[in-house]
Image (cartoon, rainbow, N blue to C red; front, side, top):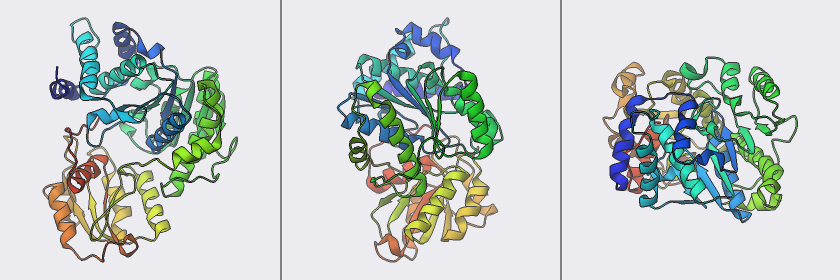
Length: 415
């Protein structure tokens, strides 16, 4: 099948939604040669920051001369972004072959009925094993204990942060959410943890102790504010960097790489995270941030204050299961104008109703929202004099980025 044909078949699985559990993944992996047993991996969970930590770790191991794999989700523009070898997307025909291999093996009546994310994860594992990578950095999709990536037994596990997100699936308290994310803990496998509140940390400590996983905590067992030179602003990103640096230094030799802080620092300086406080030229400049929960919004606000950038217009949109009201309540005081647009995915909220509720302007599309923001008052192209901010959803930011930079894109997928 062609890349587009197999994507169409894969996207049809979205109707199955999210279904947590490992039995299906284990059975399906065995059908295609058990690639989950072959990977030297690092698994990264967390409410926010896991994408950054994954990118930093992959870049560091690649700079150390290792053949690397990186699995992340969701994609911003092209599905192939989700699975990279040595920092590059794989050719479309190779991605299509991996997906077709998994779909063919799991389409029979006796096969486990995999979800979109499970097929995607298994295709990535198949590709990484086929390429015989030295280290695979895997971003957890949702939770940890029952996430599809947990079919792999990693050599190191990481939890970046705990926040109130996906409460319908993970629990409605930090302690319950932390317990689910800490489910990536494995006997004898070190578990690294970023700064957490008291209840969340106690939950992680309990899970790690029961699993027999050595726990290393930022602020207790290693420092969380070491000097780092990488172009990602905000204290939250500096903490993500400090966490990734500690994981690299401790685990590098086990992957056959030198434990060298200079290697990490040089690699980190090259990392760019699209739609994470990303500035795009404009009059005024556009600032794209995928903040989609309360903790991420608060980090965005703190970083704006750190940079001293005022906001002319805020373009806001969210998915239906996100705390849109709480997010806009925090963001609205920053902006002179608020424009609401619905993210272009099936799970996008009702932008028109939300705009009416919050007495904001409504745009029928992201393109229209961009035109409305651009038509408003703005001062020059210097972010210090103001930016147009796009926030609330990665899918909103991705669509805005596609339009602003004219990037060819596959359909988005909110899974």
